[in-house]
Length: 194
Image 1 (cartoon, helix red, strand yellow):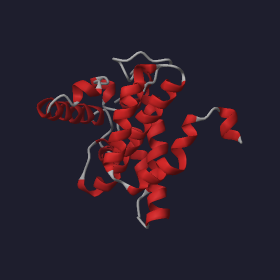
Image 2 (tube, one colour; image 1 turned 180 degrees about the vertical axis):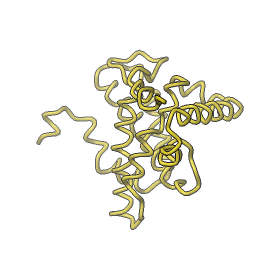
Image 3 (cartoon, one colour; image 1 turned 120 degrees about the vertical axis):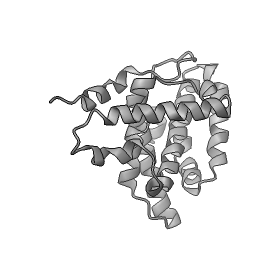
Image 4 (tube, one colour; image 1 turned 135 degrees about the vertical axis):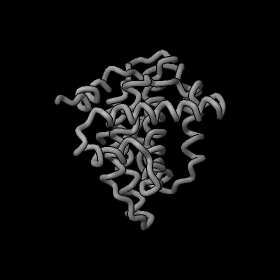
């Protein structure tokens, strides 16, 4: 029997984000997931080093790597639609869960337990999922900054809204990341190398 799980996962590169907005460069969910994994790993490390937490940073990165994989089947629903009201939010969460289950059904039975917790949130990973959601917002914020720097004012409101959402998280790890690293995203490569 043949299984399609990894073949389907590699299609993440075909699902573009920010569908309602003019982009100076396209971003797909594979790029976004990779960036989110790097950021989740960093936030977990910052929590451990600066705030005495005991996050599993490798697991946080892996959760982030797969956090949008269900969008291979659902597409990327724009944020204004996804969060328009509680009914839509709840319904879409169910659609995402069903899409995740469908992806998992493409694995051999022996591998299913190894991947299930990356696709379906559980209580054991509750704190790590908070970090993944924060990293997801940070990735969106970075995209907005990059678009603004490229002269695209289309992302101005999204940047402000995302920055406010990051602040509203009230996660010391994220605040520290913003303090230490966010200013760098405003700089050119030559400025970053100084």
